[in-house]
Amino acid sequence: MTDRYAPSTHSPARAPAGQPARLYHTPLSPFSRKVRLVLAEKRIEVELAEERYWEQGPELFRRNPAGKIPVLRLDGMLLAESQAICEYLDETVPSPPLMPDSPAGRYEVRRLCAWFDDKFNAEVTRPVLNERVWKKVQKTGYPDSRVVKAGLSAIKAHVDYMHGLLEERRWLAGPTISIADFAAAAHFSCLDYISDVDWDRSDLVRQWYATIKSRPAFRNVLADQMPGIHPAPHYALLDF
Amino acid sequence: MTDRYAPSTHSPARAPAGQPARLYHTPLSPFSRKVRLVLAEKRIEVELAEERYWEQGPELFRRNPAGKIPVLRLDGMLLAESQAICEYLDETVPSPPLMPDSPAGRYEVRRLCAWFDDKFNAEVTRPVLNERVWKKVQKTGYPDSRVVKAGLSAIKAHVDYMHGLLEERRWLAGPTISIADFAAAAHFSCLDYISDVDWDRSDLVRQWYATIKSRPAFRNVLADQMPGIHPAPHYALLDF
Image (cartoon, rainbow over all chains, first blue to last red; front, side, top):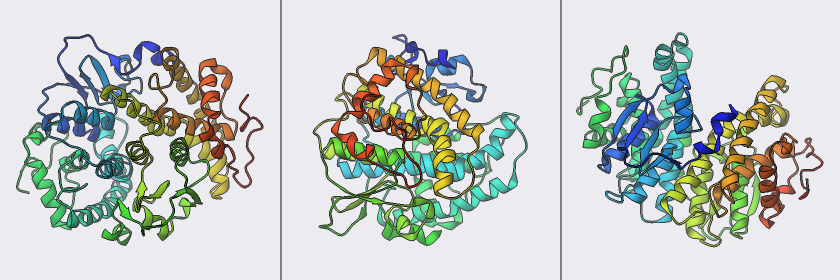
């Protein structure tokens, strides 16, 4: 593996100048979707290039020595890690702002992004999608229904937690929409594709998702299709 | 679990005013150490309170609904998630600066923090420490030598990657010391406690660690003792 980590792959890795912006992504990856939503909200147009990251090809490691997606080719660089990418986009394309002005406000956005990208992902998104999508796509086995059940049980506490936040706040991290809302919505949209969200548990969470889903930035994500895996009937409906 | 996520636990959770700054931490947690190092570098004095997070007591969830350490009580708030805490500290206590001035520089710090806290942790720190420390401390079984071996094999590629970075840069993310150096050093110091770093693999990485280890901020971390688990003889030596 050593040669994959050669100095030429250091990031911000350089990309040849003059190439169009491009996002290397995977449909139903919550991290790819988070970056796509932030790009669209900022009205930054990018080409999408689908990456089969599980095949671990040399191009994947050339673009990102960590061997992960998404990777964004922008401004002559190859950018990796969804949170680092989204904060870079917010700092370089300030309108509309997706981070609050105060340090405490920014802290809260970062805490909640970690909540969804780390805790929610480990307890819900990764196990459920792995069993119900990736095992089929990557031909690595059959779904284990106990794992799916544990993931769908774990989602309840998260919806309750979000409900509590939304009782006090217009958006998850405060009075204005932020990267935290797009991080959370990215996870929920992946689960919603395979119909694994119990929207009856909280009106506030359903309303939050309906509002964010109706933003123009969401259109492109809702048009995704995974070959062989059909979306739930309500997946692209704005009234669900 | 629902009651753990009650609205009163929302973060930035409020702590009674006038209480001294306190860090709820666990020795040999790389995330706790990262925050301790940044606090010390900023000369912010805090009490340390040891948290046995694996016992999952109600106080742990009251302080941080995610049920994780470290948690920093500061400025009348209870702050969680090491990266969010460290960036908050850098924004509110600007001297010495631990984030670069440019968006591309800050991007690179965040990418590398994610590298160590996500990838390095999953491939090296977590499996090695789980087998060699936490199973003993938490009485959950005996170490699996295959897991330890795989973790120690994975560290090589990371050291090579860091070597490549340090051929071009004074510090990991660029010309100035940053949160990324403390994130990486936190992981290495945990592994070094149990003597699991092959320092002969790269002179540049050894020199980087010797330099960061000799900073006053590191003294407190080097004084840690885990009951029943003795540090390697060279652990606290500045010349190793």
